[in-house]
Amino acid sequence: AIGLPVRAAVNISARLLSSRGFLRAAEAILVANGVPRDRLIFEVTESATIEHPDAAVEALQRFRALGVSISMDDYGTGQSS
Image 1: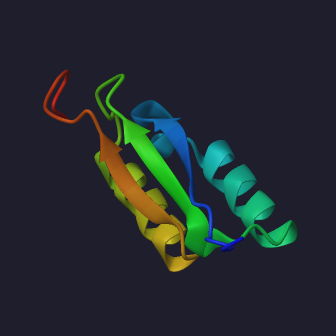
Image 2: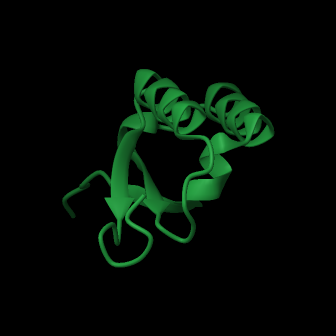
């Protein structure tokens, strides 16, 4: 059998990106548990308008610095924030 690397996508609400608590918890899990970050994708869902865009951008940049891929899911179909 050929062992192909499996990638996993995790949906994250746009609203969560502005939460410092979420950012700290997610970073701690990624660092402490040896999650293969190069195979992880955070899909930001457009379930709500991003209330604090600067904080959201900072969170996305920190996740990218940890090696997590970012995907924007369903943008343009809802709030278009």
